[in-house]
Image 1 (cartoon, rainbow, N blue to C red):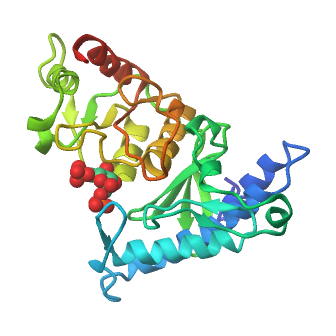
Image 2 (tube, protein in one colour):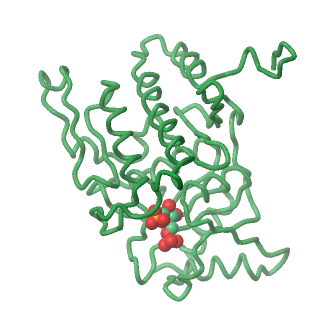
Length: 307
Ligand code: AFP
């Protein structure tokens, strides 16, 4: 850190600097990813502003509409969805978008497309291994963006004084094994045998101490803690939700890509989640992700107790 004694890092690594430095490593890079990320960060900063004043601005609560999943859409969901779509569309770097709040793909007309034909939903239905970049924003005490563009994982924290995301967590790596399991134990009666046996082995190990339990109920927050401290996050298929709850394309895949890039593992119990070929854009999938050794233990339970 270089400082003039004012406590200001005069050489701080902003997300913009980071992306440009990464872009220059690829001589044929078009700069589209950098342009896209700038649009995404604008949306994240605007959402941060809304989240910080949500109580005053009466932005908490339900919007009065439901999404294709039949879930009540919250006011902040609508605001965030509109911001991302508008900012990303006007970055002129995309041809198609998929969102939890939109029944169908969001098509984006571009000059290139009109000559080559428009992108369709079929272009979206690709397995997670095709992902180039993935990230998430966490609106906690500070706003954090965790990003991977295929070369490891880095965490950036928003400095509201300058409106920039500053690199604070360089090259994030997940422990090979943790001491925390994260699952909604309220659904224990609906678990299938492999999951029931796995969780039992964490609570009543044949040797050593039991794992601790942590569950926030927000996938981003639960996976972020798993990335930082190790262990396993699980949203399994249950007798009530036989395909699980979390959506493959825009919840499981991006988080699995990040966890793998940090040295972890992600599975649906049988195969790597990034190998699953989506059949529809809102497809759900069971998901288990985190420290490699913890996920491998889970897979062993599927081998031993699975159908
Ligand atoms: P909500 O947006 O309805 O709170 O759901 C959040 C979520 O999609 C995901 O972020 C959590 O991991 C998961 O659902 C929690 O689901 P349960 O409440 O069934 O455990």
